Image (cartoon, rainbow, N blue to C red):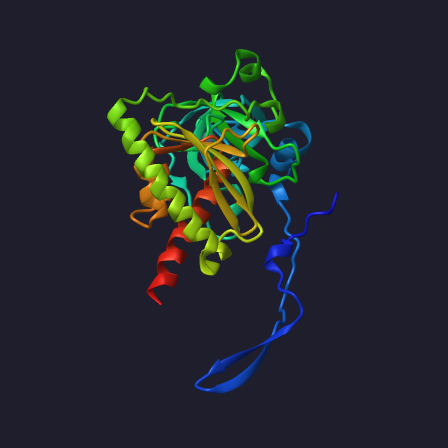
Length: 329
Ligand SMILES: [Zn+2]
């Protein structure tokens, strides 16, 4: 396996040059770099990060005088007790949300690989203070309402840990078996991410079926239009996904294949992810650039089976935008 670098390859430009024309004059531009790397010590808090990394334990500091337990252990001496020393103790790996976490869907490049994620504060059993942590769900896309203030959550350890706060995250205990809730040092690979709860759709009336047929024909035309449009194709360059789409009137598949996009009335045997969209018009409107598909996902009108596929939804929105813009020119 290739070793991971501090700066990901995708952020490193190729050696090369280009010509930019400004006011009729040509200027040569070359790619260059200016960089600094540094090493950072965790100092007195090394024990906390080493426990996360090597032992999959969560440590706090307990004041030897008043007994308050702070997690993470950010104080070596208690300011409430005339700076009495604190001692490291282990706390439990189940806790309660202290607040309703906001969800980040559109992250900066540094955090893009983790989005969408919730970020909230958890009071673990045995602790008196709340710890900031990233939150996920195994039930599909993370949307408001799944994790709120008071939700019980479980600490999960990444399979690959380097001794950072991102070595851990939380999921609701309601999504885990009792055995997994009790187990200390539970890792992400021990959790079932592959059986999200797909929303059930009601059976369509005859009128709704007719509406579906009509909307599907419109969508076919639109997808063909996208497939022929150079600008729209750029939005899915290098991207490959088979998406099974289920709506009230029926189901179909959209295939994205490095610039190509096709719609077929078929059932894919192993799609990359499933999209459930009760009213087909919600998706049709998004593809036609009448409102964003990402908004419909956040507003729970469209459900997707894999959280990280929000990225693909984002690309579909870009296709819609690029298609409309290219026609205006
Ligand atoms: Zn104290």
